[in-house]
Image (cartoon, rainbow over all chains, first blue to last red):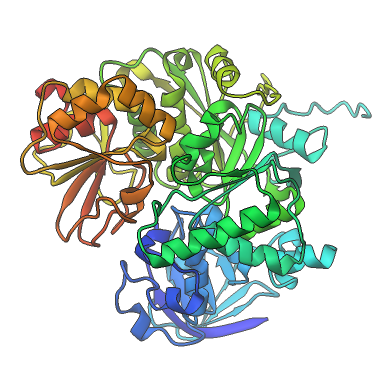
Length: 162
Length: 427
């Protein structure tokens, strides 16, 4: 699977409170959540984001609250993939469980700039920066996690197992 | 097992608990395992999503109706129609599934104060909770960790969860904490030292003879904030205080795990508790720690004393000790939230509410409320709060341009009186 899009770049420690503030957690509707995605960090995000765009961030992306509403909001806003130096562990699990593609790659997170056009090949783990003409290699997922991804998330994985 | 001559390293406390729950002789850091769950937890924000995912799995019942706890605590008593609908949705699910531990307003409390108090978690348990502060139960010598709603759904359906076995950082605590220094100050000091991702994907294991000076409430508030250093879990060595607490609160069988003497740690910190000073975390990260003598003159508008970090009886007593015979500064709203019904009654019976009310503080029914900017004390643009809660991220308690300073109940109460961040010694 490959995705391609323009990059929206953020820094370190983007927490789930700014990804989706708690004042909007009285619903779990993806569309409603997406309308407030990134609101407390970047109020312009919602008007700027286009389907397929890629978020690139620094270390510890998705730290804080375990709210699955955060990856749900990002996915529903049209983001095709999040690349970060590191992910907070609950966000990492949640993203895989709901089928939001994420890639851990410190080199790419450092080098890619806001607005760059980037392609991610999940099968090979290769990230191609078309704007800068560079490639970066992401850490591959362990086999077990790849199985969850292939089953379209944890629910599909458990259903397949019966 | 064949003797290959190669010496295998011992296991950490967390690794031993996980090995046992995975039915394995031993596990190693980095290994992916499936572990049996002793408790699966959710709240009013995370459970609605979990219920929807549970339905998709297609099971008509949960793995064990006694091993699931659902605690509507974040927006309760329901703050608006949508919150009421969410709680109604999960209440109906709990009834349909016969879930025993569903805690309604009037019997509830902030989940991570409530579960240990109800005896639902004991040493050696493996617990997952769809709330990041589920790591609190590490204070009891249990492996407990926060997960999301889909993992909660899977846990409710199968009674199992997958984990990557973490490596551990060992914190050896020595010495006796000084005056006004609580578990909260120690954990803020540690997070300030290692950073908000200093323990990312790892266990924080607490040991050493300094533990003897830490009450269970101190330990709960420290384990609670392991997640603020990015940790998978925080866990305390079990001692007499733990066993005493468990015997007082639970009839569940428990198992004490101890780290092997030759267990491998990725690093070790030696912390002399007598050198730790009261500590405040400045906006907007829990790692922006400063000792009380370095805070400067920070005027405040609100104080919140409560939450899963510091809403227990000792926290109430500490706040009362500082507020007794004093009054809250005219420019400050001081909101005190005992974390559970039991803490509430105990605080009332001990006369603490008289002190709070005479001081001009408000006392609320148990709720997470303001900690996450839900209700019961939201900040306006430009306002500042000192809170005994666990996060000071942008917009956490209200307006994105408001500020939260994290501190202990003693510092929070003193700040309420002074109208600026202050130590009780300055009053």
